[in-house]
Structures are given as C-alpha cells and as structure tokens.
Length: 158
Image (tube, rainbow, N blue to C red; front, side):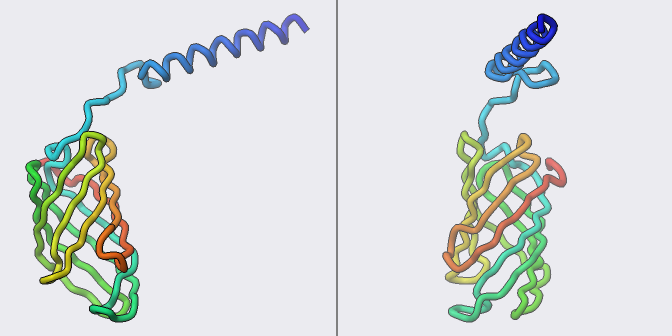
C-alpha cells in the first residue's frame, strides 16, 4: 500500500510539472512557443491549393460537385495572382484559368481573400493560416451557394 501511494504521489507531481510547463508556453522540446501573430507578409510566396465542394453549374443552374487544383502566389502586401484548373461534374473542366485578387491577414492568423472568377461573381474565402504560414485552410463564404473548401501548401517563399 505504501509503494502504491508513493507511485501515485510521483505520478501527480509529474502531471503538475507537465501542466505548469504547458501553461507557461514551453513545448515538449523545451523551446518557447512561437506566438508572434500574423500579417499579410506571413503568406508571402507560392502555394499549391486543392479544392473540393459544390457550386451552381451556371447562374441559377443545378448544383454540381467541383474539384480543382490552383497555383496561387501571394505578394505579402495584400495581392495575389493564380492559375486555376477546376472541374465541375456538369460543366466539365476549365483549364489554366488566370485570376487575381486581394487578401487581408489578421493578427490572429485568420484572413479574408476576394476575387472575381467571372464578371459580376465575387468569391470570398475565409482562411486560417497554420504552421507559420506553410499551410492554409480555406472555405468559400460568398456567394452563398458555393460550398468549397481548400488546403493550401507552400511551394516556395519567392
């Protein structure tokens, strides 16, 4: 019984120590956590993006499944250019479609990007920047019928 109590006391001490280290911002490797916030410059460079979801097949048309891959270059100052390859289950593929837009990054590493894939159609994406800007998760927030998500991976930092 005495040995069991000693083991429990040691176990509790280890847990308290680990919890204190976690709360003070120390990672398992002993280094401090990175907590410097984000800015437009956090996502400077070129990203490969994979998208999937649903969208209207035409203005007011039936909803179709959509997949795609995009190369997007963020300039670090709120502008981006891209080349998209998107395939709809009804409309087929639109290869190598150039595009451009704007983005704004918040200090909490959330962001908003906007572009017009066709005249009069504004697409707004909500982004979350992870892994020090090496990866981004996105979802289309406008227009309402577009339900597309994306995963962005940094290709380079040029």
